[in-house]
Amino acid sequence: MDVLNGKWKIVIISSICCYSKRRFSDMLADIEGISNKMLSKELKELEINQLVKRTVLDTQPITVQYELTEHGKTLKTIIDNLTEWGIAHRQQIFGN
Image 1 (cartoon, rainbow, N blue to C red):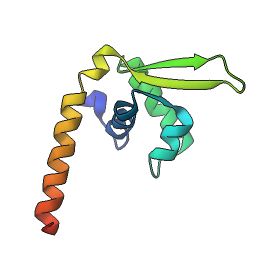
Image 2 (image 1 turned 120 degrees about the vertical axis):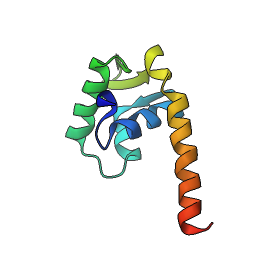
Image 3 (image 1 turned 90 degrees about the horizontal axis):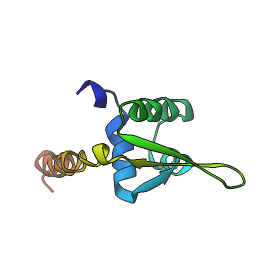
């Protein structure tokens, strides 16, 4: 759990999971409330823990793209289960 600790890591992994590959700017736009600095910090930690792979594309301006590693892809089932639980929880709380 220490590897996924914090407010943002699961949200970042989910964003990448949904699209396979994500640019930094796309994640920044997707994840409400996260700062540029925090996204960068969290992505570095995920990269150190070999859950995310960072690729610098030879574009003008330079584009940085992130994708889950094979090891990171093993989290997809867990994220799917958390999503299903969250939907069921919200329905129970709000009665919808």
